[in-house]
Image 1 (cartoon, rainbow, N blue to C red):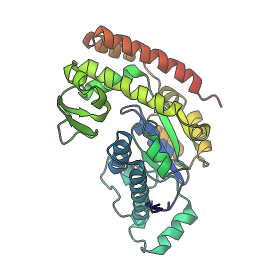
Image 2 (image 1 turned 135 degrees about the vertical axis):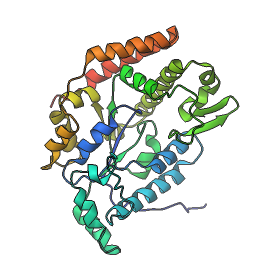
Image 3 (image 1 turned 90 degrees about the vertical axis):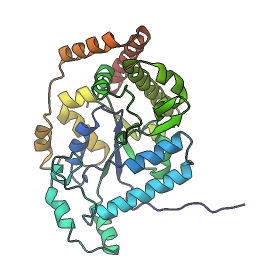
Image 4 (image 1 turned 120 degrees about the vertical axis):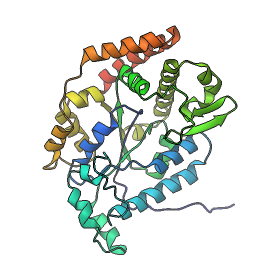
Length: 324
């Protein structure tokens, strides 16, 4: 019997994933989480996402994907503590200048490399914050790689997400573009995003708005199935955050998040909230306008799917509402 297997220890298991649908509000929650004490700046790693996606859809085994994920996160943390590969581009939401203390990353540029870096990581005990898409769906690789990871899964009203995808033209034939960030697959019917692979022929036959609606419905279904399959301990590692509550009652929601990951507000947290225009009021009239656009472009089947998604969302939001 061959007992050999890939091995990579974890430098720091204090890992937080901010996850959810594309356009669900992760870029609002991330800087708020990163404003907390000991939280590092946001990392958005396309490589980390890709290995999890490829293992989920059968293009890579989970053992290899978990190994690559650990390897990547270890190296990224080590490099970050040296100021290496840090994004200093002004205005980028993942950039050092958007972090609560940009000078921390400037100071790290002059840090001596070597084993002392690992000692410093151990002493600081940083909270490493990653932004990933559809992490609950791809949880098998993530939990295998990082058994103690905590996820904040942000959910948002389906009308808002569908309309946002529409403004980004995600229903158009854009999936052969080199700028497309989604994992794409060449099929006999054309190039499709991985979340349309099982129904690629139908995807290619749909109008743009229906494509968006069917994609979101499929992702939502995969998310629900993956979550339902988890045991209780893993479910307890996932906290659902409602975008609307985060936006309107930011301090309460962020306080709950800080309790979950064992930290507290920093001296900069309230100013970061203000920079992110929180708290803010959700405009219901604006959502009605979005629905008018969606309903004018969707088929009857598509409109019925949206109505079902809205009903499910409202029930989930009520169950996940933070009342602490």
